[in-house]
Length: 211
Image (cartoon, rainbow, N blue to C red):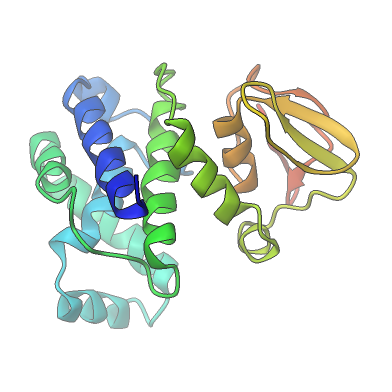
């Protein structure tokens, strides 16, 4: 399976997950601080719903600050679109060629996988990202540039997956499912009980990676 097929497969799987959610779940918080499921899906489908011109106009409105623009648009669109609208925006665009600037299709796959985990993990859903896709995203997230972007410091800590042969770093082991360790690399704060070992030694800023 090439990366374009992996992206399409991940979007297809996530659309199926979202179709089965209750409205209460759509309004539940995710691992993206301040965003419910609605805002996360509004964010991930924004590239499908916005033309290049509209994207640039929204970016200019936010003073060319991408994070501020993303947050404002996600909140606005989450309020304006129904859950069915959001699912449809994903489902009909599984083969959309969008890729983040400078990130290529590897970045597009990471975007889908990581944000999908933001709500499936927060909701306690028993969904496992297929290994081929997960390894591809772990490879991208393991680099120094990606870790610097999320503010994650692995000094003195080794991330060690307990469900597949993967590790990163050296030092006191922090163990868990590979997809949970991916979230650690992305600076997410995980629900309590998902990690073992050096849980409080790896921090993002002043926040522990676990509850």
